[in-house]
Image (tube, rainbow, N blue to C red; front, side, top):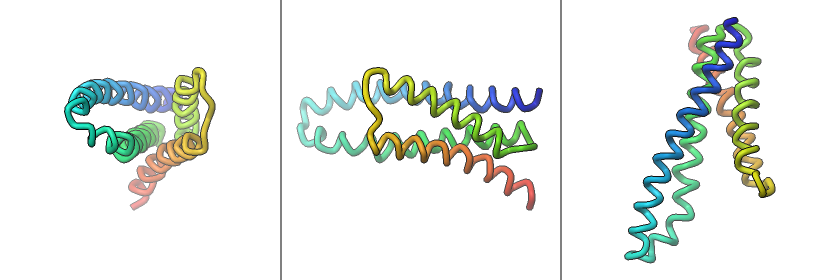
Length: 130
């Protein structure tokens, strides 16, 4: 029962916080686009902000999700984190690739998101052995 709870809670954390972050991004994007109409220089910077801010936030959410999963599971931490990572990254991939194809950058982000979730679990595990 603890295994299922760890997987469900870890996955739900990643999904719910990810959706909240996406909602915040939409609000920021609307304000940003309105501001970019007045200042064209902002359009040039906007392409890079998405990567410089958005990707680390995704990795942080995945890391915390792995940490929460490990904290609930307590045993076989790596297995639980891998399952949560595969579920959440799989769901993100399916929703993102509705009618598109996976690029090298997208593939790299998926691999790093998997690694972030596992790193969160391993970070929890390391803290328990000290």
